Length: 167
Length: 429
Picture 1 (cartoon, each protein chain N blue to C red):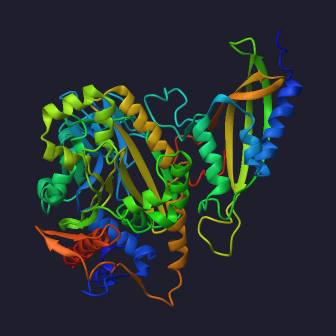
Picture 2: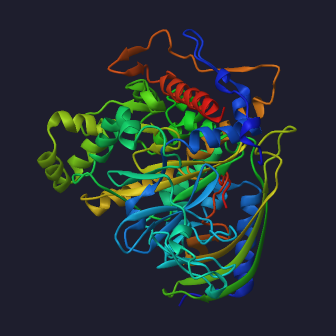
């Protein structure tokens, strides 16, 4: 019988995930995801992804491409890289549909900035992203893995500048 | 932005159509007065794309749009016709609609409850006894844009009643638009909302130049090419070789095309690959088109329609200037009608992979726009060069045809820009 996810445990998991992203340890972050995971930033969360585009709708392979691109290729949009500071709060845990899964709701606030020389357009400007997030966590071999991470930005349907850091 | 028209200067000289060194002045990206002149002389006198009929398919459907910097409403009335109306109450000037899009059988000004039908007719107002019996409501409807025309469901408005009609404006680029529709065996598209939207702190023309620029791909998008290699779709060498094939086309009226060759070989074109993968699609396409037409249809093109529209494989891209150094871009992804659902779903995921604010390509493009916007503040250097390939391009059937990395489309863009800025200046005088 799989163990139920306790609220403190869910918090620890989310805090650790936020720290991996803030420290740009993207490959370790990627390892948190289950093999069939989805990482989803919808424009409209009520829209079926088969009928419309999202800001991000990554399956496991696309997620790997995203991390590979950030860590192993000469990107311009993360050079200079984003600094981020992430806050996670309002964590709530509910049972999942599957016995080995739990659903975690939380709120996140991401502060982001790319540093650069004086007067450079697009750099040196702190931005704030508020989001409501939903995770489906699954027990895999004694550890919790992310089966779904959905991030609905407060401004999900507004024009966005560079979201190439991982929101 | 309250610059009076008569104070606007002459800007045509900022494009130097020199046969050896076509160049544009750096101030075209930064000058606030020039931006006002562009809105008046180009965006308010040219055919500007505002949407596709499928976005307002039922009577009562509406979307609000910005043409230049002016607010308008695009809506379908119960008579089945589409209207494009200035979003401004005739009484005291408040907007009558605040939403991006929706469905309503009337528009009501919230200030004093003046109410208008979807064709703009004034239906009534609060406490109407305050107006005399002979007050002619017909004279106070929402004002329509001077002209609204459709080409195959694509809606364009022109805020001026002078100048060429839509057919004449589109004539030089029409055959490429027709091929673009041809990837649907019924030659129709359907816009799938919501759009991708991004913004950047830079001038609108940077996006207009870049969508048909075949020169930057190997450098700005090397990281994308490495992702394609990771996915074993093509090696970096294969991608870069592919990017040498095709051509650029500079067309009359400011339009332009970046083109990769078409092919019936499934390894060489998307259309042929889909026909190979989905027999029903192949059957429908072969029933509709000849082999020669299929080769043209399968050519991959980024089509620029002056001044604010790009047609891409996955989306209609609308450029919305907000200020000299601020631009919004809306990517309206569309489904091809009459193809298997799996093809369209694959197109959505393929679109997200490269385009949009978190795609593997778009943010790299935007990054260089901000680099140009910062760089052109260095006024110790006056001109930007757009002369690549001038010595080797050829003029054929009204088109300047260049190497795939040449700046023929950008030169066409700026020739039209210069013409409209000069014509506008004469009209103002």
